[in-house]
Image 1: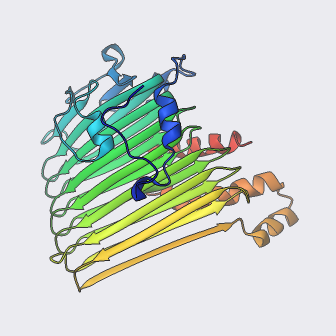
Image 2: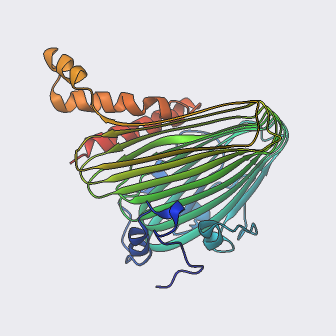
Length: 363
């Protein structure tokens, strides 16, 4: 199968850690039945519920509310977004007065092969909202999302990647207006590969942008996150907080970049990339970057990779805690700060259960 437009290879610096072979294999995988009913993945939260199966909306099992279908007209130079543009039954939503506090839930279910889905979400001035997306099944799921946040708007986005096999690629392109806030939290806790790719542009004064989450890998699995935050205006704040856990012969990779334009004085940017190796044969890559052209800024970055604290394990063993349980407790604590950024308690508890299932399924 030839993928059009062509996707990058690992010779491209920005894609050197991505598992393109796994993506190609997932795109050509044969159909197979879903292991679970995707409707069970919707959380007990009022609001629109959209179920997409292989990139097509299942209207009978969806409540679309103010969301409408659209093939997606946004054009992007990014290869993942370009692949999704104009394909599949994409969705569009513009939330204004009367939609304050709305939560849009989307479940993406794949049965093999490739599927593409473009999306666009706009929040008008001072509108708070949340978006929860869940991925299950198999195949290559390619999703592109364009976000526009008006002045004072606030969006809390949570993504649960739980596919049993295959590959999930996500491309976010966000523009955050004056005093607006975007917080995106990702959990990769399935058994497939991932590429989480995004660009947040803080286009208004005093804008806030945050991206991060937890990547949990085992076996020969590979997760790859690549995020850029661009500060264009003064007094912007950004946070990138990623936690990677790798077991077996798996690999987790995070490249986080902050760019500060000349006019973006009084910028406050911070990156925290931490990795935990549960096996000596696993690999964690962390690449924080800062590119600063303003002179009145406060920016910091840090990257660490290590193993579980042996003293803590010894202490817990002396208190009668079995080794397997002790390792699980310490690892949960390691990823807790990244996932604790989720503001909605129902969503946060669901993500915590996803983490528990991952630990329960570790080889």
